[in-house]
Image 1 (cartoon, helix red, strand yellow):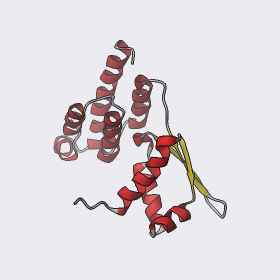
Image 2 (cartoon, rainbow, N blue to C red):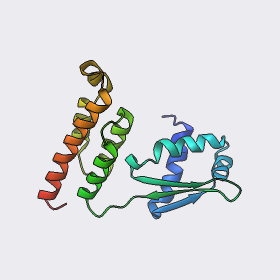
Image 3 (cartoon, helix red, strand yellow):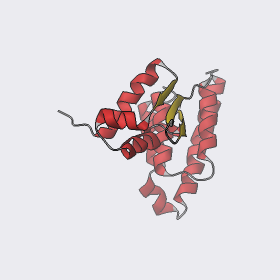
Image 4 (cartoon, rainbow, N blue to C red):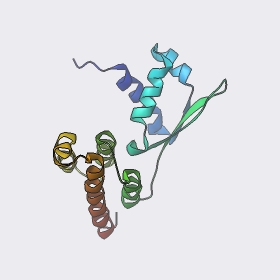
Length: 159
C-alpha cells in the first residue's frame, strides 16, 4: 500500500473542487482544521502545487475576513498556453519551475510522457551544472527553444 503525505492529500482535496469549477475560495484555517495540520502546511501546498507553472493563479487577502482564492487558468489554445509558459521562463529558471512547466504540458496533453522525459533529461540540474556555472540561464535557453518549436508545431497544426 502506498503511503501519501499530507501535502498530497491536501492538494488532491483542493483539486477535486477545481475539477467542477474554475475558481476556489478557501480560508486557510478552515482547511488546516479539516486536516488537523498547521496553517503553514496549507501555505506550503498552495505555494508549491498551485503555481502559474502548474496552470493556476492564486490571490490572497490576509486578516479576519481573509481568504485564498485559487483560479484555474484557462487559455483558448495550446499555442496560447505555450506562449504563457515562455513568458514564465524568462532569462533564468530553476529546475523545479522548469519541471513544473513540463508536467503541465504533459497533464494538458500538449506533449507525451516520453517527450516530457526527454525535455527533463536535457535540462537536468546535474547535467547543466557540469556544463556551465550559469545553469539557470542555460536551462531557460533550452526550455525556451523547446517551447518555441512546440508553438511552431501547434500553430502549423492549428491547435
